[in-house]
Length: 177
Ligand SMILES: [Zn+2]
Image (cartoon, rainbow, N blue to C red; front, top):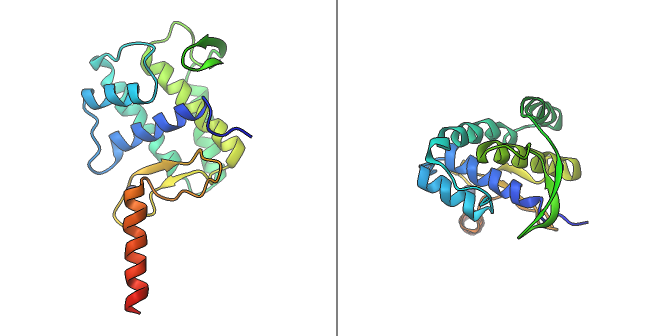
């Protein structure tokens, strides 16, 4: 089973956007959004700063998915978004991905294409793994979200920094007692 292929790029992009737009200390400036899109391989069209508002709204729309307590609520959210967002699935072949699916109509601009890809990639992750691969960072005081597309799938933190900080705190707590 392949869990870290082309599909995961929309998942990683969704996580990056939610953290940029809704987490404490997140940077959702136009420059940060431009970087985020490039880092996550959305370089099919140049980012237009006039679209920044669309991306910020989409980040806030996706945040609740990562906070969902149960699969029914997550399904309801994804299903309503999939009805709302015009989809037009088709095959495409270009670098760096080879043959793969596109979800937005070919004529769409970058914000719409980003919405369609992130939404479908999150839905595919849920089909394979339920809600076991996504959540809010387990570290004290951190409100960043994460998604785990690794084979092992045991992630609970947004970053190594948060995992280490939590492990050190737990180690000290054990030593004191
Ligand atoms: Zn964290």
